[in-house]
Amino acid sequence: MTEFGFVCTGVRADPHAAGPTLVFRLRITASPQTRVHALALRCQIRIEPVRRSYGDGEAAALSDLFGERSRWGSSLNPVQFAQVPVMVPSFTGEVETDLVVPCTYDMDIASTRYFNALEEGEVPLLLLFSGTAFTGAGGFHVEPIPWDKEATFRLPVKTWQEMVDQHFPGCGWIRLPRDTMDALLALRSRRALPSWQAAVEALLEEAGERTP
Image (tube, rainbow, N blue to C red):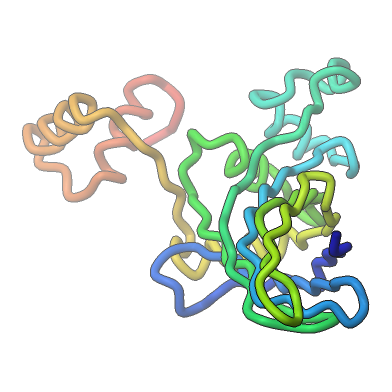
């Protein structure tokens, strides 16, 4: 059985992607002299919140995910970030490849709310690998890659912020049911409000959450 190892060596935001996208750089090693024809990998990425500290502002912003700080001993559980496939071409010994991870700025998603709450520092990630390896010098041998293959990585918060700003500069994003959108559009039309922002601000003012 071929022994594989995985290391994440870096990450960057893809400025040319149609939507927010992170590109992780992976270094993959195989048993010495083993010919690997291809790897069909699946990578599950989890956020491990317990592996970093938080300022008071960050803790307040994370209360909807984990509750009050006094409860974090039991509530600071891992958060699912992504699950993506990657095909790795032929190599012997060692290879580096990109792991492309499409992201979302949907604030209904727990991982997005987590990233959005952080002001600085790094996000502790755990990358779990599985899949199938096609190996052998004189033919194809099919080998499974078990889930115990993993790598840790600390994603700079600044990288996430830069990625979001590339696609949503100075903006946030929320998802609403269609009937709510229709009602908001009707309100905007009745009051001749010039934008969605003006419609939301008008409602906030009426609720006393924002001064005119």
